Length: 355
Ligand code: ATP
Image 1 (tube, rainbow, N blue to C red):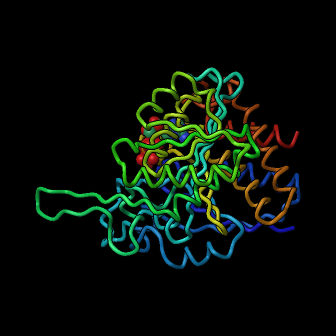
Image 2 (cartoon, rainbow, N blue to C red; image 1 turned 90 degrees about the vertical axis):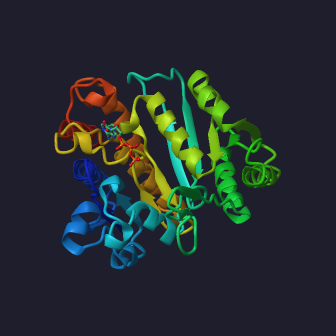
C-alpha cells in the first residue's frame, strides 16, 4: 500500500491549518499503514516572492503524478496582476486538471452551536464554467472592458459541463437519501440556466429512484435558512454553488467547518471551502476542521477511484474523530465559541484517533 500526496500550504492561515492537517494525516498513516509519502510545493504569495509566480507548470506536472493533492487557501486579493505572476492557483488547478465537480458537504455536528437545527446536505457545484472569468474560456478571460467605463462578463454554460455535474450529483444521491435539488434562475436566464436545468432533468430520467426538486436560487437562499433539513444533494452552477455553500457552512456553525474537494475523472484536490482569512493568520486560532474534513473526503474519493477500502476506513475514522473533538468547547476554536487553539485541536483529533 502506498499513498502519494502533494500539498501546498497557501496563504494566510494556510500554513497553520496545513500543519495541523498533516499531523492528523500522519497519525492515520501510523494507524492504517497507508504508506504515506508527502511532497511539498510552494504556491501563493511566498512563491511570488521567491519565483515570481504564484504557481508553476512544474508544480502542475508533479501533481499529475500523485494520488491526490491537498491545497491550502489562497489570498488572491493580495496578488499582483496575472502578467506579474499573480495567477489564481485554485483556478489554475481546477482548469488544468479538469476538476469539474466541487463537492461541499455541510452538516450539523452534535453539541456544536449552529444556526441550523438539523442539516445534512451536499452541494455539488459545477467548477469550470459559469461566471468564473479566470477559468471559463479556452483562451483569454470571460470578463473584459470594451471601453474605459463599460465592463462585461460572459457566463458559460455547456451541455457537456451540465450533464457531467448532474450525473455526479445523481450518483451521490443514490448512496445518500435519494433526493436532488437543482438550483437555477431559468425564469430570467432562460437560455443559459434553461440549458443547465434541461440537462439536469434529462439526467434525472436515468435515475427513477431519485426525486428531483427544482428551486430558484433566490428562494433557495431563504429555504436553506428556514428548512435546511429538507435538502440532500444540491446541484447548481459555479457561482450559485459558491454562495450557497458559504451559507450552508455558516448554518452548520461557521466557515471554518466547510470541507470541500475539487474532483474530475482522474484527479482530486482537497481544499477547504473558506479563504485564507488573513485577519487571523499567525495567531494559532484558525479552525483546521474544514481542511481536515476535506482530507477525509479525499481519502474516500481515492478509495472509489483506486479501490483501496482502507482509505475509506481512514476517512470515516477522521470524520468521527473530528466530530468528537468539535463537541468539546475546551478543544474547538474561537470561531465556534470554543477556547481551543489550532494546535490544541490538532492534538485532540490525533489523540482521539490513536486512543
Ligand atoms: P475567499 O473569497 O478567498 O473564499 P472569503 O472572502 O470567503 O475568502 P475567508 O477568508 O474565507 O473570506 O474568511 C472570512 C472570515 O471568516 C475570515 O476573515 C475569518 O474571520 C473567518 N474564517 C474563515 N475561515 C476560518 C477558519 N478556518 N477559522 C476561523 N475563522 C475563519
